[in-house]
Length: 437
Image (cartoon, rainbow, N blue to C red; front, side, top):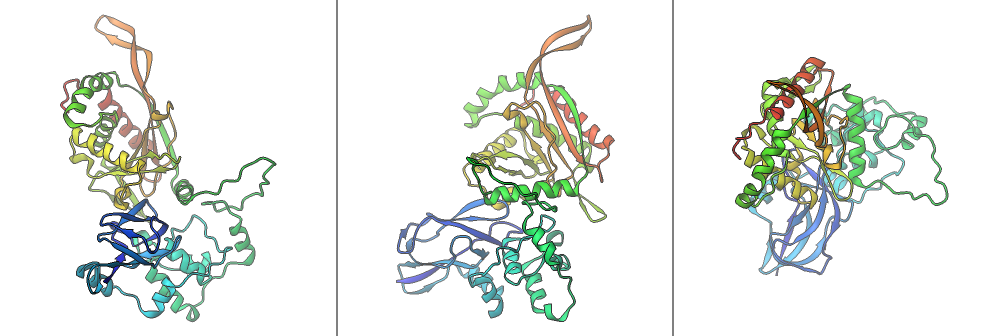
């Protein structure tokens, strides 16, 4: 019999580690090739890790809530054969090339003795591994803010914090006052102000936030703190859109085996408006504006557990209506069934939130960072409306819908934000009934 080391696989660009949520099999259990044997969580999504071989799990190396880095062994399987069988020569070589020294390995792999009182505000983005090291080494938030991160958008990487720990005694660093630390420990998730004491009354139920809800809370607070939000509203006559969909949905479902929703039409209109106003498709980096080449549309999706996730339609401007419909249906299905990959939620340059799917007429959406705008689409409602005809104005029953456009006033003024919304409105109102699907 041979030993096979199951390694944490690559999960997309920028994802370097994951937290073990739960093992689906126990030590001593036999697993088959392609069985999902462990659930993991990154800062973006939860996903399963399948085994590429059949065998018996002889040792689980990473327990629940522990953090593993990409390429690190998380379990050992016993398989047919002799000697030790690595996952693959390429993976093994990659792992060895980036193998940490003994001191680093000890820091990462030893069970962490974390002080429960060490908490950090939403002002800092910290990966689970970096946060664990900071807590183990009793590094205050003030010290973390003094570290110049070398990661994306200045984020602190594992190497940054380990270098800081190594040189910590040779430099003067700010120390947070004990009173500050006490206040931080009492803060609600994602806030920078102390929480008032709330006492649960008899019969009240206390529900701890799950991991995803904590991430959502931190991201929402951070987004409101970073970007000065402005929201514009418009009411749009989408009667032609409704007629076109009613005409084509049965044909599309028979031909493609997919449902035709309104979302591909909305995405098509947004993409065309972004092409008209490319300065909506930007991000801010310090005092610089990064104009994005690709148009990647985030699609806010409600999950069965009540949480929210935003899968991304990559290069939406290069897809036909049929291609958009298939991409949207695929992402929505995988989001609701916990089958998204981490890369499926990365790289959005603009986001759409369909609040109308819950029967809401309109909303004031929060801009996901580092984007600068988001569109909320309300419910389509039949209403009487005034129409201009060659014979004069008439009142007719039309399908009307509100749209609300939130944008970052640091770089998007009312003229740009309003004109972009008006163009989305125009594309939908003037939808060609002969458009091919």
